[in-house]
Image 1 (cartoon, helix red, strand yellow):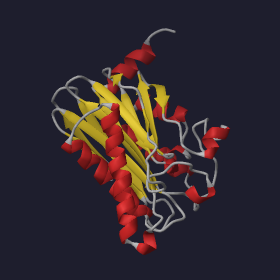
Image 2 (cartoon, helix red, strand yellow; image 1 turned 30 degrees about the vertical axis):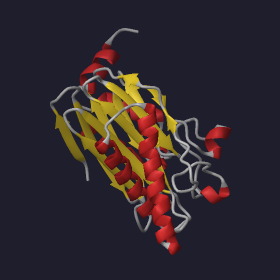
Image 3 (tube, one colour; image 1 turned 90 degrees about the vertical axis):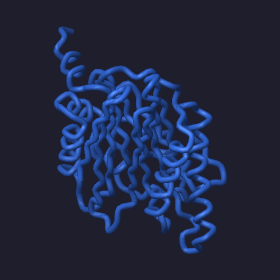
Image 4 (cartoon, one colour; image 1 turned 135 degrees about the vertical axis):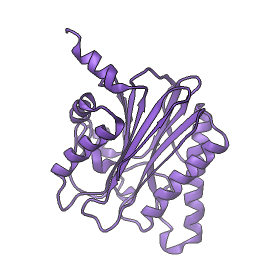
Length: 268
């Protein structure tokens, strides 16, 4: 189900999300966000396949990171690392309580926004990604903590085909719940511009659709909700019986549909 929210305070932000089970028996993706007149936080997590409890680990990761941010809203790198560490600690604590889920783990990708100053910072562990677009073109994306990223297989935007993302087989070399310490990659703080757009998604989505599809869909969309509807349609057209769960959370700053159209209309 698509959801859309528009806030009218400070930096204008709108958001939309979807999560699809694909052809799996359950959905191990989790999405959540907090949006108030001063701050915003958006989180996506994916339970790592192969071990029991992935769905629970993802939900713990999202809820803990959000709650930590709400208690102490900040876009400072140290505070963001603290939020991710809290998520890792919460998963480890639950592992100790549940013997049959003692190896559960999850990825996380998160975006933190100070709406008063217009500053944004993001962080991730694993292969769930954040894409940052400006004027309809990709500015930056997170680099996966995976062996395929290191070898260049995931660099084109569509990941390697098939295979569970198993920490135990070293395809992912970082995940929440895999170690006592969360090794988090945190971006430099960025000053937002009107029309910036962010896509946070699990690997099930970026394995299906390319960066170019993301950009073209953004340039055609009139809202965050419409952008995700276009991306979901593109993903469904390529999904097959082996398809993983795929989920996405879109965040629009201001009105990207006006800025992207203005940018693409200018002569080269």
